[in-house]
Length: 139
Image (cartoon, rainbow, N blue to C red; front, top):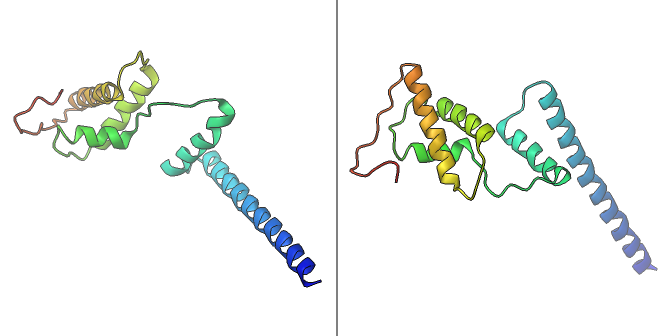
């Protein structure tokens, strides 16, 4: 008798746990959708939406050009500047729209974005200071 009650209680508990998980997941999706609709989406939430849409869209990228990684690579060659992050983001946006990969490396896409950021900086009268460590920054 107690085994039946214990087994039934375990089944009901598992069912409730599953329903709570699904409810929390669905609520988080609705929150992200609301923030997207009201233009208050954070970078992490935008990435989560992209991941959520990847399987239904059949989109499986092998290389991802990210502002953070490109900024990290730019800081290997350039001294930090208050506008560097913004200009790198602009460069990544342009490269992301124009890039066609023919077995090129992600590194090349980042270098292109960094080059665009340097061009944008020159157009705005901003001068980035290259780091002086005796090596060629393009290698």
